[in-house]
Length: 262
Ligand SMILES: C[S@@+](CC[C@H](N)C(=O)[O-])C[C@H]1O[C@@H](n2cnc3c(N)ncnc32)[C@H](O)[C@@H]1O
Image (tube, rainbow, N blue to C red; front, side):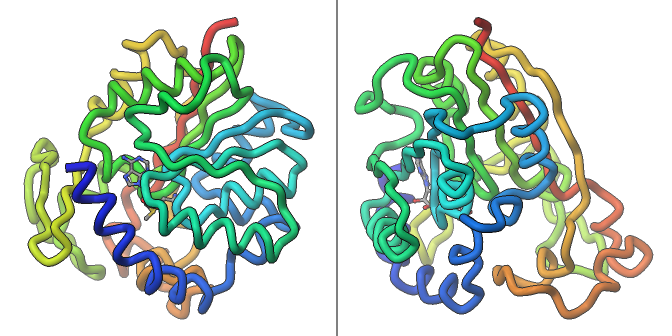
């Protein structure tokens, strides 16, 4: 399933890059690093992991690399890890344009054999990562292994409570039960996606020995969340009001900070 997902991301990397060039958020992340995160994850990093200046940081499933460029702007030594060679090529070209020195590693997040044990002070994953992962236990196991003792894993991702609904705003129409987690095959793209529950997302972390220090459940911060994939400011602020858009009554982001015991 991961190979099918990788092929799809390789095939679509060009059009995805054009879409991201239209909103241009990646250009701003080094100077405005808070833009590289959502759901309170930026604050979690600051309050728990502290300054990343001079620290070794990895982002897994780095995709658009917003978090990568943000962390590099905060003077971290950043490694960007993604399963898709084409996605990494886009990110590498952008890093050159931004004048950022980033290490790029092509690897499946469930198998980071290319990365040495105890390499990083901080590992992050961001928005839209877990949906591609068939084996969460393997990801947490690899994160634990590549973290230095005392290091943190901070993620923010789409909250599981947003998954059961038909994909439209302004109404809540149940599409499937919360416990139907997939795999969901996209016939056109040939991809496999997963809609994990809170239990699925959190228990495997504790199984690996990581200690959960904090979770946050946050609403969408900009109406663009409900308007499509662009990071341009949204046009319809009413979508942040749950009386207009019932899905805004539920958390949109789940963020968590984990620590490998010292
Ligand atoms: C929609 S992006 C979201 C990730 C990122 N947070 C972002 O905002 O761009 C999904 C990225 O995850 C990568 N990906 C998918 N499955 C992966 C896996 N098993 N291991 C590592 N990266 C993966 C894809 O290649 C793609 O670049």
